[in-house]
Each structure stands twice: as C-alpha cells, then as structure tokens.
Amino acid sequence: MARLILVSNRVATPSSDGKRAGGLEVALAPIRKHAETVWFGWSGDVVPAGEVATRKIETAQRSFVVTDLSEEDYQEYYNGFANRVLWPVLHYRIDLTEFNRRDLTGYFRVNRHFANELSKILQPDDIVWVHDYHLIPIAAELRARGHKNRVGFFLHVPFPAPEVITVLPNHERLLPLFLEYDLVGFQTEADVGNFARYLVAEQRASDRPVFEVAGHQLVFTNGGRETRIGSFPVGIEPAEFQRLARRASQSAFVRDVVESLGNRALVIGVDRLDYSKGLIQRMEAFERFYAVHPEWQNKVTYLQIAPRSRSEIPEYSELEQAVGAAAGRINGMYGEVAWTPIRYLNRTYSRSSLAGLYRAARVALVTPLRDGMNLVAKEYVAAQEPVDPGVLILSRFAGSAAECERALLVNPYDPDSVAGAIARALDMPLAERRERHRAIFDALSRNPISLWAKHFLQSLKPPTISGPIPRAEPRLASPGR
Image: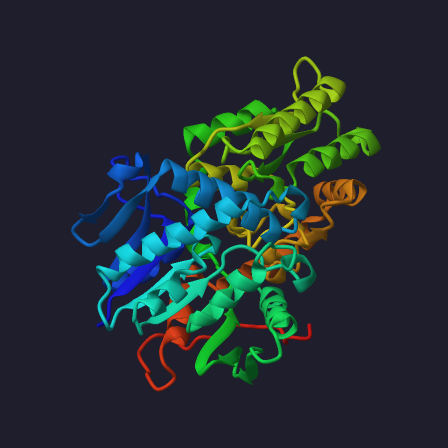
C-alpha cells in the first residue's frame, strides 16, 4: 500500500507523558491505525539560523519527520503572516490584520523549506495530505520540484466570503495555489460555496477555471489540472465520548467541582483564549443575563476555561487582560461572600476532566464569532446523560451549527439574545431537552471521526482507482449560494 504523508505546521510527536498533542492528532488517529504514515512538519523548536536541522523520529508503529525554524522564520512565517494576517482574515477580523511584505516573504520561504525537506523523503506512490492555512503553497512547491503525487489539502478554519477574503494582500498570488492540489476539503458547505465564488469572480477571464458538479463535489479544471472541492466536516465518536464522560463524572476531580457548586446550576464554556471565540461578548451576555433575570442570581455559576495561546502576540495579551477584567467586574457587581458568579481559569485540563465537567453542566455556552467547526459543542452533547441532558447554546457562525440544528442557535454579537437563550436553557422542560439532545446526538453519530479521513482519502484517489475504503459523501454548496 502507498504511504500516507501527513503535513502540518505542528507535529504530534510522542511525548513522555503520553498526552495527546491536540485535535488534529485525535482526528487522524483512526486512519493512522490502519495505514503506514509519516507525519511531517515543524518540530516546535526555534534555533539559530545556522543550526536549523531536520530529523526523523521512529517509534514501534509511527514515523515522524520534523524540521526546526530559525527565529526569523518563526517571527515572519508563524507569528507574522500566518497568525497576524491569515488567521484574522479567515475569521472575518480584518480590523486585526497587520500586513508586512517581509512576513509574506517569510511565509513563502518557510513553505519552500518544508517542500525541500519533504522532497527528500517523498516516494512516487506516496499520498500527501496537507493541513491548514500555514501551508497553502506546499502543493505548488512540490509540483515545481517535479512531484506528481496525489496531494490533498484540508482547511480546518472558515473560508470567508469573497468580499472578505479579497482584503487579504496578495490574495491573487496565494489563493490560486489551492488549484495545485488534487482535492481541497472544507468544513462546511458554506466554505465550499465561498471558495468557488472566489475562484469564479476573482480569476482573470483568460485564467478562470472551468467547473462542473460531479456527484457531491465540484471539479475545477485549470491549465489541464483537475481539482476537486468538497465539504468534509470533522466529527467525533459520540458513543465513545459518552462512555468517557460517564467514567469521568465519577472522578474525585469532577465530584469536588460539583460539590463546590452547592446545588447551583453549572454553565460551562471551554475555549482557547482567542479573539475568534467571542469571550468578551460572552461575558457581556452573562452580565446581561444576571441583570435581566435576577431570580437566577446565586443559583447559577458560569465556569469559563480559556487556556492561553499565542501570548507573544500583543492582541492576545490584550484579550487576556480584557476578559479577566470583565469577569472581575461582573463578580464584583453580582457576587456574594459565599458565591462567585464567574469562575474564570486559564489552565489546560485533560480531555477526560473536560468530559466529566461537560456531563455535570446544565448548559454549555459555545458562542464563537467565527469557527471552522468547534468540537466542544459536539463533545458537550455527546457527554450528556440521555435521560437528563443539558442544553447546548451555539453560535450560528460555528461550523458545527450545520449538524447541531436543534441547539439553541444564537447571534454572539447580540448579548440580549444570548442572555435570553441562557434563561430559556435553564428553564427548558425535560421532554424538550431530551428531544433536542437525541436529534443532535443522532446527527453526530452519522458523521463519526472514524470515517472523516477515510472519506477524504477516498475522494483523493484518482477516479479510476477503487478500494475498500467506505464511499465518501462530502457535502457542498453551489457556487452561487
């Protein structure tokens, strides 16, 4: 069988404590059990320019190839163009974009370095799967080096409307490089539609790709190359997570948290400390909830877990201060000696601990301003006790809203709407809670993570090749949506 070469910015190399590195490793774990894989990417180390090295890490069943970054590469490629240009634009925060031509140069330079190192290990029949916005140029760089491998790309974050993405400086240089891939996957149908509309609207007439609908996908033909485009929403394993939550709810940690609530209802939020998550707006909504519904004061505790991320970027440090100040102001206004309305923590907790907390929570607040998918929403639903489930309040701008239609969908920019949803969730009758939970759980069960990679790789195969992998059924929106 052909090897599967996984390419991502960070690599989930084995750690001494055995902890998972993040969501991508969880998503790729099922396919890695059944295929020979090599995972390639940044080692996470920043070293002097003359000491950049690439090395191979072998375990009993896994192979990794990692390369270092110099300080200049790290600042320009990662902190610069990836996180201060691409990330905010892709999340509709063009007000936070800070473009620097030097950073763009560094972005392309690091992608060339990655391609150079990847070329050294690439075999003709390898299948290459590239992940996320850090590495858009990889396929073009590999083609320039003569590689004809099947290469796929998956964007884990949103792809915004053409009116937004064209704010990106040099978009006409970067975004057409997607067409060097054989398959480009997105989280939602809306993302597919936005990308297709961009290609049709922004390419010059002489270079404009021709597209056709083929089954569940769009096929763009440009310069003799075909690129398939489809929606492949990332899922979870609901039944497995439900079992994890059931066990975790009996742990000493979760029991202590529940006991500390003193019979108060728990509302939970779990997010990286990132401006795309809408944490400031969420704090304002909860403040509004206490003001409009004083009957719930001293009866509800809001636990917000928000581990720090990218603290070296000024916008993130400012966000941390602003969220902390908002929590402190609300606690000072509504708190009592024996009750703190908001428990705000910047610590990281294990997946098991979070599963137990989800199960204990009456309500989950998942209200990002924009999100490619958001698996917290799905995990919260999966963690619930079916006979007495909690209620999910979900931003309509999260990718997971497409599958979680029976959640209370809200506009995160409207604090009154969110405050009303919190009150409705807390008062919701048991029969309605059960019906909503069952509908979402069933939807999640139809799209388990165990099939996500299989679906994508099935679509990445040449049309004439068939195999035992289950048939893909990605969904898409038409270009005119």
